[in-house]
Amino acid sequence: MLRPRGAVNLVSLVLLLGLAAVVYLGWIFVPPWLDHLDMREATTAAFNRMATDLDDERIRSFLLAKAKTTGSHWESRGGAWVEAPGLGLSESNISLERESGSRTARVAVDYQRRVRFVPTDYFQTLDFHAEKAGTLPQ
Figure (cartoon, one colour):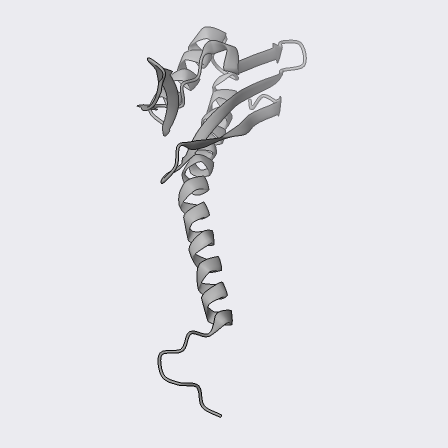
């Protein structure tokens, strides 16, 4: 028996809604993940710089400068949430450790990002951790 023209198939409707949900969540969560990949790359670059640069403050400044040009973050100004450029990291988010005798080092960046679900004012906090540790390159 043929269906009348214009009838909606329930399975197709559920699949279409599922696809729309996946696209929406990708639109929300992929940009912070890509920004985190940039911070992981900066962490690796900072680790490699530690082999030749003995000044930890210069390494920390390099990471903070990278965080200021990567992505955006939400901050509270006057009771309202405003999107600001950069990841909003401070020196307390960056951990640098080195052992000169064994030429091992560790660079870690821990931070949180708030993402906003666009039609609403609901925010979700995501935790990120970028770390590079091991023997320094020669």
